[in-house]
Length: 254
Image (cartoon, rainbow, N blue to C red):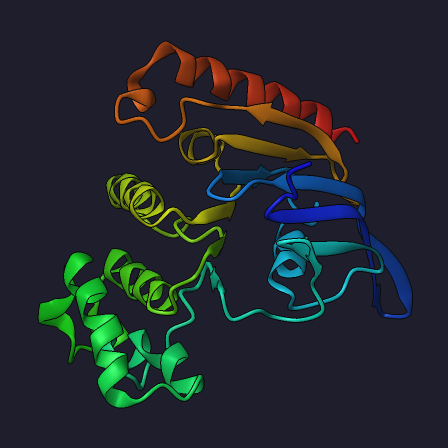
């Protein structure tokens, strides 16, 4: 029997807030194969981001376990990269310094940092902006820096928490295509949290629909055409968007 690359096994998460116990997730189970692209969508506050943090090893579940390559995850692993909604860039560091930050934290030599980061920065069109600071960049450029920093770590698992939500429509679509190209070229396993139905359908070959809090898996939608260049203009794309919208309405009602 093939072991899933990433397995979320009957995971529940309860946290305390102002003396009250609040259920964020309840009995969530997923099996993500190596090299697959998944999207997670659901009502606001349903635990999407919490689920991503569990996958990243940034917090432990209250019940259940998360496994990567068959091993129980007890903390962050070096091969997992996380891209956040707010880019996570330091304003006092320039493009190059932000891009190599993860490598620097790991104690990688300056020569090796440059060897690993520069090809990625060139590929992402950032070579001429190396000395610029985040405040001098557009939103799309800042997100490219965040992507460069993640890829410089040579991850096998890429987790993204609504990374494109603050961008205008055309920039967002361009970066969606870039994310797909990176996924195809590098064979990454990719899990994306998004509140956009269209983004989930375009990027996720499997789409997890969560209910309202505490988030439970309402349905896992098979979406095999995701990532194909013409998919966004196809009838199937619109049909999948309609299907997902209906499922979200059901999930909203719990």
